[in-house]
Structures are given as C-alpha cells and as structure tokens.
Amino acid sequence: MKPSLLSLFFTLINYNIHAKGLASIMETQKMKAMVPARLTQTWTTMGSTIASFMFVCAILSQYCPYELRHIIRRFRRWLKNNSYPYIQIAIHEFTGEKMRRSEAYACVEAYLSSNTSKTTQRLKAEMETEHSNLVLSMDEYERVSDAFQDAEVEWVSSKVVSTKSTRNEQRFYKLKFHKRYREVITKSYLEHVIKQGKEIRKGNRTRRIYTNCSGYKWSHTVFEHPASFETIVMDEEKKQEIIEDLLAFRKGKDYYDRIGKAWKRGYLLYGPPGTGKSTMIAAMANLLNYDVYDLELTAVNSNADLRKLLMETTGKSIIVIEDIDCSLDLTGQRKKKAEKEEDKCYEKKQEEGNNSNSYSSKVTLSGLLNFIDGLWSACGTERLVVVTTNYVEKLDPALIRTGRMDKHIELSYCTFKGFKVFAKNYLNLETHQMFDKIEELMARETKITPADVAENLMPKSSLDDPERCLLNFIHALEEVKVKAATSNKAESKEIEPAKGSKAMEKLAATNLIFKIFNYLV
Ligand SMILES: Nc1ncnc2c1ncn2[C@@H]1O[C@H](COP(=O)(O)OP(=O)(O)OP(=O)(O)O)[C@@H](O)[C@H]1O
Image (cartoon, protein in one colour):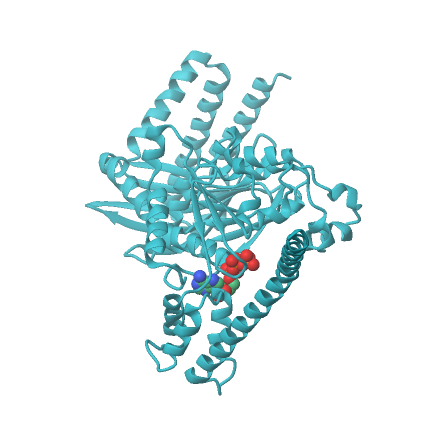
C-alpha cells in the first residue's frame, strides 16, 4: 500500500476514534454522572475539530502541490518571525576550522562573571534532539539578566553535547533582546561587553608557563612568580627604559601594522650567573600579563619540531631560551652536555622506553635563527623572544643582531647603590652605621652578585636581626675580597716566573755583553 494511502487510512481511524469514540465514552453512565452535559458536548466538539484538522493537514501534506506547501511554509516562517518580538544572537566558544577559542566568547564569559549589577539564575534545562544520526543534548545552565541604557537583555549560557561522544561539546552564549533595541545592542552594547570583558580578562587572567618536555609538545602549569620591576635591583634609569620599552611594545599593534613588521620583539639578557636574568623575565611577564614559553632546546629533535613548537605558541607571550650558549653549539652542532646533565626531559624519555638516539637533536643554528626571525616567526602576534646567556661574547653575531635581538640588556654585579635597595627591601633599613664600612668594601671592585647580596641579607632565623644580617654581609664581602686577592696573587705568580725568567735572561745578556766589553777593553 502506498504510504499516502496508509496515512489517509490512519487519519480516518483517528477521526473515528476522536469524533465518535470520545463521544461514546463520555456517554457512558458513569461519566454522565460525573461530568455535566455541556462539558461533555464541548469535549465532543473539540475532539471532532482536532480530528478534522489533522485530517485536513494529512490530506494537504500528501496531495497538495509542492509549490503550495512551500508557500505555506514560508508564510509560517514569516508569521513566526513577525509575531516573536525577540532577537537572539549566539556566541560560540570555538570558531573557525582550527577551532580556536573565540576571543568574543571569552570576553562575554569574563563580563558575565564579573561582580556587577547583573542577576544570575541557575538553570537546569535539558533537551534532546536528533540531528543527522547524532543525538544532541542541549543544556541551558545559567541565565543572566543585564541592562544597558534603557534596554534589557538576557544571556543564557548553554552547551550542546553529543550524547554519543562526551568529547564533542559546544558551549555558547545566547543573547536575547527585544527587537526595538536592535540598534543599541548591536552597535553599542556588544562593543561595551567585549571592551569590559577584555579589561577584566587582563586583570583576571591566570597565566601559564609552558615547557616542551616531550619533543614538539608544550605542557603547562600556572605561572605564579612574585617578581616585579619594583623588587629588581638595578640602575633606576636602565630599569625605567626597559619598562617603557615593554609597555610601548604592548601598545604597539597599530605601529607594527603601519611599518609592516611582525608584532614581536627580541631581548638579549646577559651577565654573570645570579645577576637576575630569570627574575627579570618573570617581572616582564608579570608587567605585561603574558604567558611564558620556556623553550628547552635540548629536548627538541629537529628544526621541523622547533617550527611546530613555534606554531603552537599563542599571542601575549614570552618565548624564553635560557643559557643559549649551553644548549646549542653555534657551529650548528648540539653539545652533549645537556644529555649528560640528566635533565628531566631525558629521564622522562628513558622512562618511556625510548633510546637515547631518538633524543639526540638536529636543531641547527639556522633553524634557531629562522625560529626567531624567519617567515614562520610572524605566524603569531604580540610575542617577545628573550634569550639569556652568561657569555655574550660566545654568541654568533647573526643571533644577536638587531631585528632578532632588538634590545640588549646587561645585568651585572651589585653596586653600593644596589645594596641600599636590597637593605631597604630585605631589612627595611634606609641607613645604618655599618653602611660606611660596606660602601668602602664595595668600592674596591669587590664583585658580588645581586643573588649573593640577597642571600646574605636574608634573615635565616628569628635571631637574625638587621645588625646580624649586615654583619653576615660584611663577612661575605671580606671573603669575596680575600678570594679575589688570592686569585690575583695566583695569576701574578703565574706571570712572575715568566717575568723573572725574562729579567734573568736580560740580566744574563747584559752580564755577557759587559764581560765581552771588559775582555775587549
Ligand atoms: N637584580 C636583582 N634584583 C633582585 N634580586 C635579584 C637580582 N638578581 C638576582 N636576584 C636574586 O637572586 C636569585 C637568583 O637570580 P636569577 O636566577 O634571576 O639569576 P640569573 O642571572 O638568571 O642566574 P643564572 O644565569 O644562573 O640563571 C633570584 O631569586 C633573586 O632573588
């Protein structure tokens, strides 16, 4: 039997049940007793009408020409659009083919979670729909009302989950508002939400520190370093210059666009161990509110992996290569030192059962140069590349040329001025009678690193009052002085025999000439 005829058959049965069946049921003695006669008649009429309507619909859908059905459908849509006075906009969490997290979604999220006059209502509404063999469950879990100028809006946070795969979850915000506020909402309110959200995100953002333990993949944890430029001890003018440079970089989007340059900047930090290079990187990240990507070059297998790592970094970040002279031989060959040092990545690889050959890297200097300044380096925006070294003179000039390392910052030994800042920060002392002695000791080219100053000034027990700490520091300075004197002596002893032998040679030669002269005379 044809499906259309089948449908007609069932419709007729339906009609029969509703029109007659219902009436006959109502007419039973029992019902008569319970229900008044007028109500029974109403039920009967209603049943007949519904059945007739269903019958007509079935006839229409089966026998009505396609064109007419299309017109009816369009009419219904028009009716729906014009009778429903609200507009809805959806902002999805992930957008585009690469499924990057949408900035707009993050801003809305931050805006709605901020503590303003918005009223929040927890919802638990779930619906299930079947869409092309995929069962989707829509979960509306929060409703937030907000007001802007004289418009009232409502945000509903929802997620659509595929019940077949829990990993397939799409979150979105639905914004609902009356049609008469269309102008205000689309032109001003959404802009206001995004702007506010950005501001809130800047302040609230939990920053991350990433490292590449397993080849070309970053793993991360929360970045919580307390360093700031206020606590870094260095020449005030130099410090101010660095801060201004960083802030100008952060605000420089338009400038970089205008001059046609990728929005990135390279910093080279150099100086002896313990002079604050790592501390400065943390202070930079805290000042700019950037993430940190700590690139472990010894764990990267090839230039291609290095490029993949670069592609995985996000904007608003600092890519750090610490002690670059230890990780890469500047002729392009990797040093074995890193492998011998039993770094964590190596151990992890071994635990995983990989042999050491698979660990050996083929990252070359040119690969690194391309990473910093090649075509691929422009694939992200707002990134700083910071390279540190204890031996700047060992670095290849190509690596540190302007354009790759735009700003060179030397961090050096502590001066008396620097000591006074440490004393203020660590001991809350602006002046003390022992300062003169300290100044005298520090003036005589006593090379002490800020790390050593910090360590000696730090109270170790409750008995360590400021005087004791200053005394500790004076001892440390005297020790440094003695060490410097002994190493100078050793150096001069190494030179003296040479000097002595030369002098002896000279003396012998003079004696010989003198003897020859006497003999001749
Ligand atoms: N300029 C500084 N101002 C304040 N504290 C400092 C400074 N330099 C070093 N310190 C202190 O010394 C410690 C070690 O410094 P840091 O690790 O930053 O030195 P580094 O130059 O990176 O050393 P390395 O070259 O060995 O990595 C820090 O925890 C910090 O407390």
